[in-house]
Image (cartoon, rainbow, N blue to C red; front, side, top):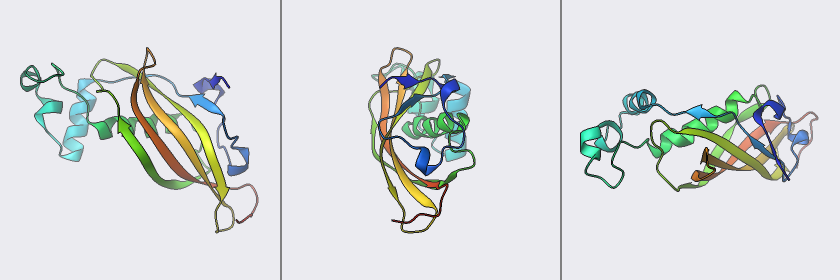
Length: 161
């Protein structure tokens, strides 16, 4: 199955609309050092690996890298920008099997791909649980982060498991 570009991603996907195997791709995003520094301040993780270019010259990276959780947060943000679950999401149930495969640097343009891999009705009426395989990729399609996301969506109908 081919990837659907971000302008083809449906808005407000309900549980019943989810098709297992469907793959989609978000818009691209340019990562900046200012954004990495802002994330360091907000999270209080000011480790020099993320904030100090002089320190990083003596590391295997040679320059500051983004926090792994910066990339993971960006993955959720790029998906949210697509508005796929804008009014149908009840909430995230968690991220599993998160792998920080390669470092993310300032100046890189990235995008997210995601594929629906599983779905089931919740025990509570009107809710369904959807599992997605989500990847953060460089422009050349190298994987930076690979993860599984589980989300709780509204149903169109009041079904239960």
